[in-house]
Image (cartoon, rainbow, N blue to C red):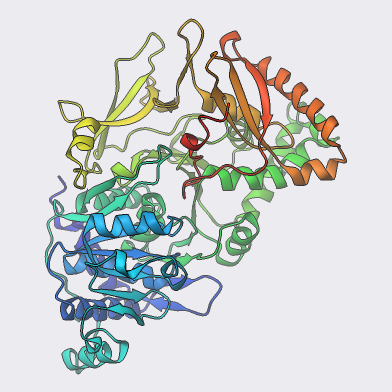
Length: 558
């Protein structure tokens, strides 16, 4: 447990507000809303007054649901620095899932965007004392005296408490040891069952500490926050680590299409970029693939020495597309397509893949690009913070990856059986991922334990590896490899219909193309991994907010 005061989560932010009072902290991208650290601290102080007026006590739960914006950030930090427990709810959750989380967590206050509130039935959340809009702080519902939390009343009480104004010297938060609970994050995994991850302050502090040590964040750093803040990945680094260090984060509240993101990168010129594979792969497919498949570039790439010139130009073009000033791009949340990753390493694009999970707040392993990251690996376990090992490895060294350390959750809220099942008897957290660790300590993930398939003679088949090959074929948007009752493998393929239409192929010609593509992929696979059939799927697969396919929805489709 990190015991030094400088690693205390609450003190990180107390120091940052004091030291960077006049610096810009957060901007709602696409609007004229920018808050300095001082203005953000004042909003937090006003929320503390609101909490007190509502009778919120230490360890009470406060839920927040909405798209990324500066008010979301204020609620999150206000809850934790007050001594309450924050319950972030992903804005993409359906209303019935949100209602379940609010009730299951026992949240007493709910901060929610107006659009998310439209689907909530007030009668179904009877224990919530007040619901407040994240759009403009107006009370939506009240089981209290309205004068307690309307904006004018809070502003008046703030002035009474701070007649001479609220300044950097006034920022002081009660000491909270890092072993106290910071948040309950409800997972959005691919198994269809949401569990509340109990995360102590120590887990959040561990990520901040690591981000500082590798110089990912520092005073004046610039981040574009497009991953949902309610998800552990974006929350830990684009928000918490950035603001703890005195950086400036631009909050993208719109759906993060490649077009919108490239515009934001060009404007902000971020110093570090956090992304999920889907975003990078889409940009790679639109910007790079058409170039490298077109003569004479495709020929030159096969010629030693000359290929270095072309690779250098492509690298510079891609770097400029992301703003031109970032030190490295960090990929996480899901596996990166191996062929895309191999090409990016070939052109020496400053990128590394990390590995984590909500239950570890989220980071488990990462090696910065300039410290020798390895292709296809997700780095080394965080030194001095986490440990990792392989349980019951097979002859290839592959087995379930288990971890323990500073970033690890304490369990699942109100779910002792799930908590027990998630830990080994000697205290290691089961990740549910199959992987191996090489002689240098680099972790390689092969797939999920639950998605691994068995071949006709008991061979291990990792569908994610086959899907990566299919997804790299022209005209393929995404795919799922499933197993029929007769053990044959079937690939559900969602075509890129825009590319198909542009090619001029009719339906019959496209079916012929996909059959040729199936044979091409099979030529690269072992006999027991062969795809027996390709079925076309009419639209994109449903995904979690971190863009992993919800596989459980499709298991009965073959």
